Image (cartoon, rainbow, N blue to C red; front, side, top):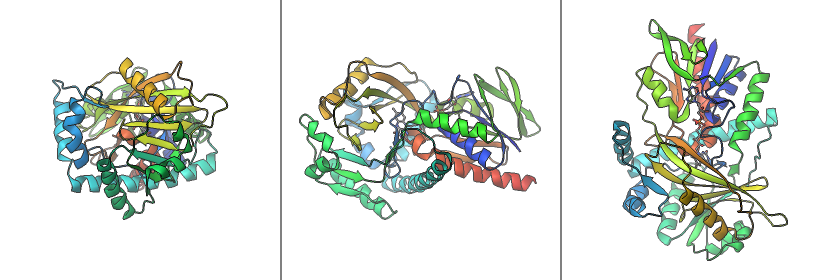
Length: 408
Ligand SMILES: Cc1cc2nc3c(=O)[nH]c(=O)nc-3n(C[C@H](O)[C@H](O)[C@H](O)COP(=O)(O)OP(=O)(O)OC[C@H]3O[C@@H](n4cnc5c(N)ncnc54)[C@H](O)[C@@H]3O)c2cc1C
């Protein structure tokens, strides 16, 4: 069975690799000249298996007015004359209940645990090199209210099998001694999760593609999908700038751009781009670099040591549908590094990046077959695409296996 996977971000690469492992004849295509150049390029690098709370939660709802009114806020909303934005926004607000947020957490935790197991197995068989480290993650809470909210989430997740500890401010410094370099660190406490990992998402895409090619898959780069050819009620080919590509099944894994492709098939995807930024700065020589990933909830900023550099990611802008790098965002991240790890990094020429998270209102990705067609969806991984890619690839592989068995 020939399967064409559209989009070679982390989700498409993982899907194509998994399908090739299952014995499908896989063709992976991407509009860019190399895999992993869009949202999967320089994200926060966190394999955040236990930190999956949906963005839509009662806590977010309570904090929303303050977040939106503050000029320095990491969260911004740019209203647009776009029904998709308003439909998404309403669904998002509707998802900010305790029950829905808890349900989302349970689904995402299950996907994340499947992802962890799958990536571990893949790494054992492929020996990929992508800066993977099991370094643990510390979430810093600026206020006792934020700490209480985290404690509630930790209790909920403990019942679902997560092993996380609440730490005092002093214990936070023991968990990550490099925080002693922080200037005026005011925290009420933190959450420590020792099983969290980091890895470079772009390098992982490249490694997956190498393994896909070794398994006999094909990769077509610089190939932009613009529509589909139908034969009866099935898709027979994807139309591209390089001609039609035929297959027996098609997987949409085009990240935030999947929305317009799906619309060509009459499919409405509740996926909206949420823009974020990162900088990557090298550690100075002869310093003791941080070991753990640190999320500073006060600054809404994530710091991840990635080999000899620090990756810093921040911001959630709803409605900024472009990749322009705003100087104020970069300055805020540079300042955050200087304040948190004073003197540890060379901040003279940070590598800057912006990406669009393909977010669903509930933060739960859309993985599966579209009705009884030969179109499959693997989209909407929001802020967790690196974390969930392997798990959602396994889930999609299951759907295609069932279809192949039914067809045989
Ligand atoms: C600032 C920031 C920090 C983040 N931090 C983390 C983190 O720490 N951990 C984590 O798990 N996740 C993180 N994420 C989220 C993660 O980066 C995304 O969920 C993930 O990259 C989405 O992957 P994707 O493959 O779905 O999309 P993409 O990486 O965007 O890939 C889609 C691919 O499809 C291709 N494409 C699109 N349209 C077409 C077309 N018509 N024809 C052909 N090809 C097409 C694109 O060129 C692209 O290569 C972060 C995101 C941001 C923005």
